[in-house]
Image (cartoon, one colour):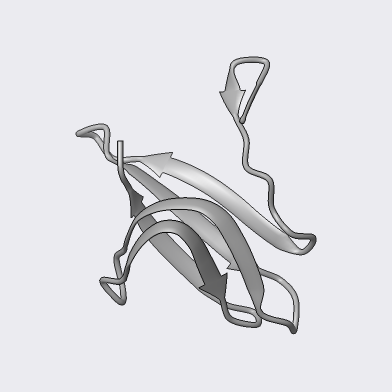
Length: 73
């Protein structure tokens, strides 16, 4: 989704997303679940840099969990 030229994500309540870019242009998405319930996040495309899990759609984020995704361009 794009709003005013800025890509935004439709996230469950209590989940934050921040994107950071490396010098080579690689995008890293930081997902933070600030709730005590697992949350399902849609439209995740990339590889979790900690677990090496590959996502092409939905991702389950544990209660108070954090995931850093090397996003596919």
